[in-house]
Length: 388
Ligand code: B12
Image 1 (spheres, rainbow, N blue to C red):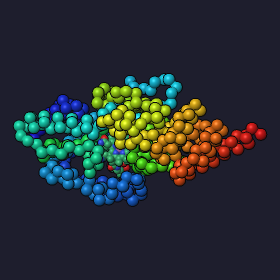
Image 2 (image 1 turned 90 degrees about the horizontal axis):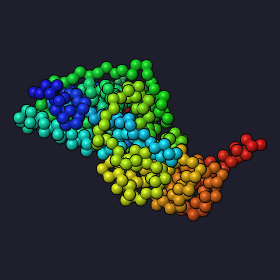
Image 3 (image 1 turned 90 degrees about the vertical axis):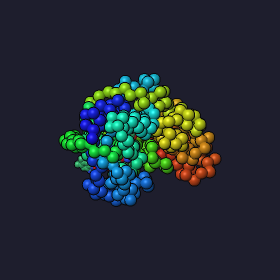
Image 4 (image 1 turned 120 degrees about the vertical axis):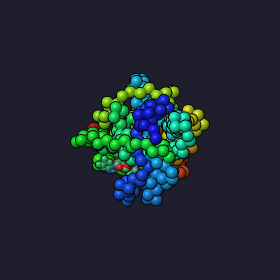
């Protein structure tokens, strides 16, 4: 047996500044929520999130049959001092959790360190299973039951002093540890996160419609982004932090300088949109090696940058979109560049869009070009009408 206080001390040595404990007993109360979310299509597009997986995830001992306790761990990552350069250049935004090294590896390494310290302390081997994000367990449910934090209405786990700027993981261990009590949810009447979400993805308290969430669209979604959502996505090119930035508890977060969560260059946090659209796949892989951004894939990242440029670019930025339209090997990127050009180019975009249509063979890109031409022409008619 290890005392919780001693466990916290060891975890802190391993770089895990927040830790709490729950038992390895099942989470039956999760089933109705998971089942309903799947049935309502709230996880549409994530084909791996099946009822079968959800059922499996209710029972931690499916992952570690001799597990007795779950150590829920959190790594805070809020660094207030890094802001985008004030140079007027259109830049994308990358969600903060992805600025540093891939958190899966960071958390796993630290849990392995804690495991070694635990074995040393107890003087015997400890059977442990390390879980971060991808395992068939609901990380946030473990964190909530262990009292590491409480569920916010934005569905995030809010951790005392750190808000939701905390990445989660867990260790299932074969030792009994006194569990911590859960915390009471503290959102009260506040619904700032729901009001802040630009795409209306937070359809109600504690309920996210993933297919509308900018995080899902920019990271997980591989295909065409629905037309009506594009103007709402701002300049996010990987993930989104808006529902966290709106939360009073998260606004009050204690700052942490954790080197593993710090960007090493501006491309890791506020990349120039023009740069994203011009880099080769090889350069993309080199710059984002060992980082979560790689998960968006080169074409997805460029698609996101095209939308962002359409939303916040200047008329001068039409040149890079024209280049993409003429030369990018991925139809997905050319298609979104056509949309972006219509947003930026006004009248001036018409000849470029017509030329592109004359040479384009891909049916999807042609349909985007026709929509873009229609949009631009409609703007012209409206403008002419206003002039009269
Ligand atoms: C799938 C997934 C996504 C999907 C869907 C998100 C979602 N809300 O489910 C997408 C791609 C959209 C996504 C986005 C993000 N994600 Co994500 N994601 C996951 C993943 C893999 C599974 C989540 C899951 O099981 N969802 C199932 C559904 C049913 O859960 P839910 O709708 O949130 O409902 C829960 C609560 O709302 C609560 N609940 C429901 N009703 C009620 C009622 C009351 C009264 C209360 C109190 C609670 C409550 O219970 C439900 C079950 O837990 C986890 C890792 C893991 N293995 O657990 C990471 C995880 C949840 N993601 C994480 C992060 C950081 C993010 C982003 C912030 C990334 C970003 N900056 O772009 C965004 C945040 C968007 C948001 N508001 O959720 C962190 C969250 C850390 C934290 N402090 O909470 C996790 C835990 C990864 C990690 N290891 O740290 N993610």
